[in-house]
Length: 293
Ligand code: HEC
Image 1 (tube, rainbow, N blue to C red):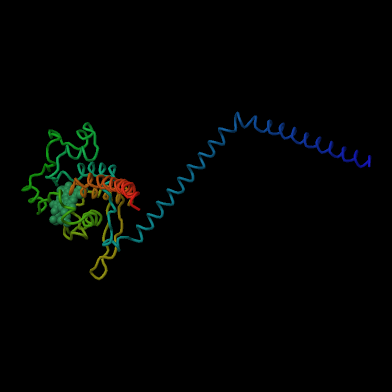
Image 2 (image 1 turned 90 degrees about the vertical axis):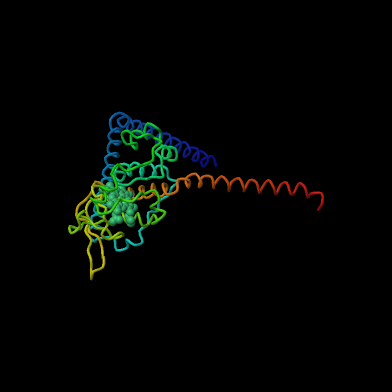
């Protein structure tokens, strides 16, 4: 009995000693290992991780570019008649970009005769100094209507047609039409403008966004449009170009009915009010009728 007990004792002691030794060795090892880490190899590993991250991002971008290039070579646009802008006038940042691009690429020819600059500033939350800097033409006041500098008679002589006022264009032709119009220009040397359009065949408008989009040609089969092939890149990728057009269409959608920006946010408030009001009325009804039942 005694022998068994002392054996157990011995074993226990041994166990503890081993544990202790292992722990001590572990601490020493850890201290050894962490010392150089903390000083020199930590920044190295961070750098290495960053380099890996950058490599991965680069690889992803290369992959995306390659994919876009392949898509381009295959051709695209067979489904152009179903293209939609998917814009939202509640997206103020998109409206601001649309206004900026409108001023840079469209106002030269197209006026917005029902809209004042000050209204744009208020609705699109553009501070007065930025309105002055990015939207107001030299000499214009913020209370002015958005007018085009080109006299209609000159425009008619140059293009054969006067560029229409765009205030109500999305309401008269629809946002889809304007979106498809701006996305289906293709190179056509037989036209004086050098370009043609699927949505508005023989359009008198030049492809004013071609520096952004690049140049595409249309391939026809049996006299019908089949697909586009991009033959020269623009300053934007295909996706970025579509986003730019979406912003422009969004801006023109807002311009067609500026009140919709406020109406939509007012609508949400009205519905919330009605919900709260219904709840209150219900509570009141319970209070009034509680003695009757
Ligand atoms: C160089 C002058 C010029 C510029 C700049 C210009 N357009 Fe035009 N635009 C025209 C002319 C001319 C027409 C008439 C085309 C026709 O009816 O054949 C037109 C027509 C239009 C139409 C009506 C299309 C239709 O189906 O009737 C829209 C929409 C339009 N332009 C949008 C724009 C937008 C958006 C921009 C800026 C990105 C822009 N335009 C820049 C000259 C211009």
